[in-house]
Image (cartoon, rainbow, N blue to C red):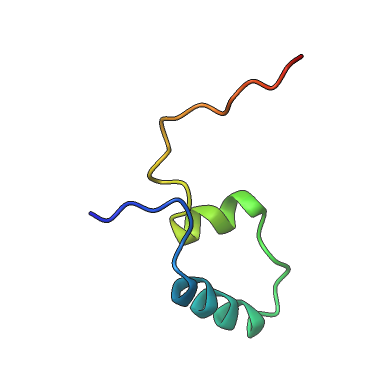
Length: 52
């Protein structure tokens, strides 16, 4: 299985093309990421804590 941190451009373009024809409101950013498989490679990783 290929791992990536961002979906390939052709996948995003195809998604946007499908979405442009859908009359419903856009899904949440989390749902868009899930549909595109974005972040699957780092699913178990935690974000850095940027507290001072």
